[in-house]
Length: 117
Length: 219
Image 1 (tube, rainbow over the protein chains, first blue to last red):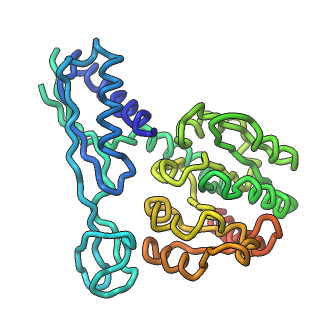
Image 2: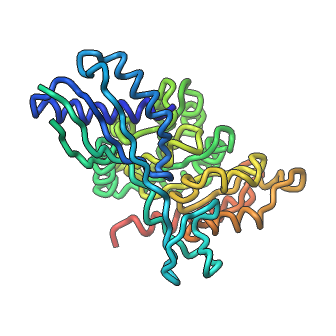
């Protein structure tokens, strides 16, 4: 369950930033989660609810986690074809060679948060 | 009030990894992050590596496990410096845990530091520890499906050590298929076939390490 550890890291970053801006109650957290980032949206939602339950001082009751999914995409370095990678993610569907590089889907970012003083 | 951050979730880990990396570079220490499923034979392979190379190089090991000092004890029994990290349920090592152990090592007097990660083919691949090389051990009894099933691990490593090849005659593992699958996920990754038990192929692994050492020392 490394989503618990990840959510702990996410909330530490937000807590620190909110402290500097005088924000004391969090209403919303938005993340960008890539398809090949190794983080599972469902498990992140569950972790968020657990942390929220345990930190009622820091969260509004209605606080929500919003996850924007980033699709995995690869591009062939030989022919330039952009494609959605399957199991053999480096395999270009046109060239039939292992010439693809992942160009999107590895992002795992805290996009923003909303809160009040 | 909305605050836009666009911060990488692993930002604190990555800062610690950079701190580690700078320390390793300043002390010319070759650091290898060794990952695999539980039971693939990381510790046995490290034992054989310490046996095979400690006449020529000063080797140290960080052992990552949920619990116990067993792995560090096995390395210490061979006379190498080893520090155990217990993650107490955590499924991977992170750069902060590694940084916390570094004061226990004399890196100026260390040529190679192996970090044996927690046995897991998922989470460890996402955490930069500040290492120079990421290596994954895959063992024959795990079967052919591990490379396609855990692509992020094989995408983010540069060398696969196929261990327990002495069992190939008894199991269904197909080496050609594994090489093809690896090429399909990460064409730049190499594969060395070996057996830590029979020592077959260990010399190729040692040659790879010596090449990495030569690249890491100042000219």
